[in-house]
Length: 142
Image 1 (cartoon, rainbow, N blue to C red):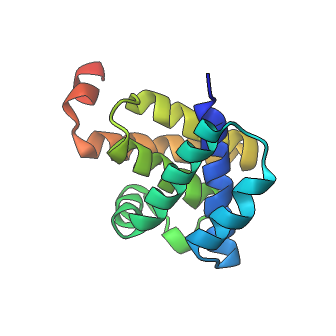
Image 2: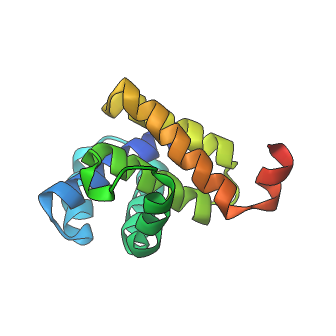
Image 3: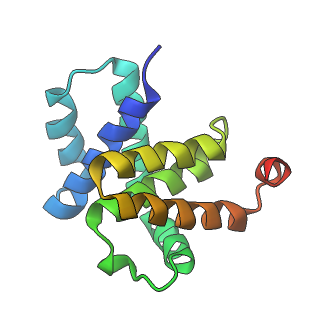
């Protein structure tokens, strides 16, 4: 079975490359994915997450801004900002994945690619976003 976790790692790395390197999404996909060994399914999901997140930045960033108390998006570490973006995109657009799983995966990415403080920060922001979305399945599980 393909690893969705690996897809999320690749998508996060592409988001970072896109933002920090200021490359087009097409260039990032063309130069990044071929250099990584992974099943086609893993790469396809990574591409979908990356391209979807980039396409919806305009609606994702305001959500982060509203729920990251005392933090401006520009002041966040690029990795942390992109972990949040990726998770929020997935919460909004991948209904078959439980929101708790999306948040847990984001925390694992933060743990691997950022600092211990980033894990706690991401957890707080993503939980607040999840609650604000008022998705019925999530409310029942809370």
